[in-house]
Amino acid sequence: MASPSAASSSALLVPGPIAFAAIYALDSGARALTATVIPLQAYSLYKEFATQNADSYVGTTYSAVAMISFFGTFLTPFVIHRLGRNATYVIGILCCMIGMTGLATSTIPGLGLGMLGRALSGVIGSVCLILFIVDFIPRANLVRSETLRLFTSCIAWGFGPVIGVELYERYGIAAPAAISIAVHFGLILYFRRLKLAKPSVESTPPPRNPLTMIWRFASQKRLRLSWLIVFGRSAWWSMFFTYPALYLQDHGIDESWAGWLVGVGNLLLGLSPLVRMVAQRLGIRRPIIGAFWCGGALTIGLVLFYDRPVVFCLLLLLAATFIVTLDSLGNIPFMRFARPRELPQLATVFRTYVDTAEFIPSAIYAVLLTMFDFRAVFVFAGLLALMVGVAATWLPRRL
Image (cartoon, rainbow, N blue to C red; front, side):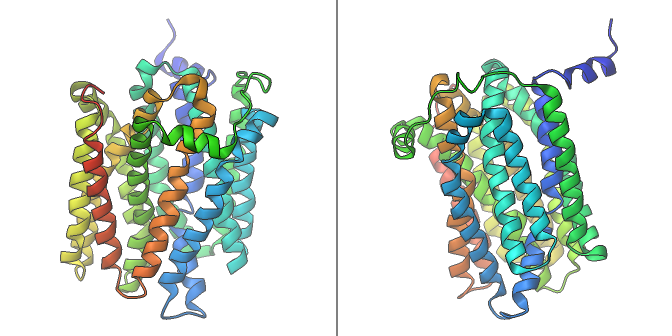
C-alpha cells in the first residue's frame, strides 16, 4: 500500500482536485505578492502630482483597467479555439509576467501595464481553469474540489500580501514584482508537466459572436443569478484589497498593517473545510444568503469605528470571515446550471463578473471620493452585499 505522502505526490502529477488546487495555489502566490502593493504604489505615484485627489485617481485607474480587461474577456474563446486551452493558459501567465516587468519600473505607465497584465492574466487563467475543472472533476465532487482549491491557496493569499509589502518597504516595487515573475515561471513548468491532453483544438466548439454569447447567458434566469452572486462576492473583495490599505495610509498607520490586514483576511480561506461540512449538511443556498447578509451588515458597521483603526480592522476581518463562504461556494451554482456543451462560451461570459465587479464599483468609488471620505466606500460595499443576498434567496432550495 502506498504511503499518504506518496499518494499525494502522485496525485500532484495527475489532473484532478489536488493538481488543480496546486495550480491555483501557485498562481495565487504570484498574484498575492502584489495585491496590496499595487494600490499603495498607485497612491504614492499619484500623490506626487495630485495630492488632494490621489484616492480618486486610484479608483479611476482600477476602473479603466478593468474595463479594458472586460472586453479582453471575449477574445479568450477565440484564442482557445485557435491555440487550445493549454497554450492559452500559458499565454495568460505570460501576460502577468510582462505586467510585473512594467510594474517594476515604478512609473505611472509601468503601473498601468502591471495592472492590465495582471488583470488579463486573471481573465484567461480563470476561464481556462473552469474548463479544466469541469473536464476532469465530476459534478458530484465540485464542492470538495472547490473547497480544497480555496484551502490550499489560503497560505499564499495569507502571507503573500505581508511578504509583498515587506519587500516593497525594504527594496522597492521591483522586489515583489521579480518574485512574482519567478513563481509564475515555476507554474508554467508545473502546468506543462501535467500534460492536460483534452480537449484538442479541433474538438473545441467554434466560439460564437460575443453578443450571441451574452444573450444566451442572459436569457437563462439561473445563470443570471449565478453571475450576480459571484459579482457581489468579487466586488467586496476588490474593495478589501484596495481601500482598507488606503484608509490605513490616510490615517498615518504603517504600511505593514495593510499587508497584515489583507494577509489575515485571506488566511480565513483556511475555513473552507468547515464551509464544506456546513454545505454538505445544509446545502449551499442558506450559507450563501447568510454570508452576504452578515458580511454586508458588518461592512456598513465599519463607519461607526472609522476613527478607531484597531476596531475597524477587527470588524473588517469579521466581515471577511463570512465572505470567505462565498469563495468556497459561489462558483458552484454556475457549474451546476450551465449545460456542458455550452460551457466554453458561457464560462467566458460568466468570467466577466471579475472585471465588472472591479470597474463598476471603482467608478462609483471614484465619484464618491470626490465628495466624501473612505466611509462612503464601505457603506456602498456593504449595501451591495446586502442586495445580492436578497437576490440569492431565489436560488433553488434543494441546491
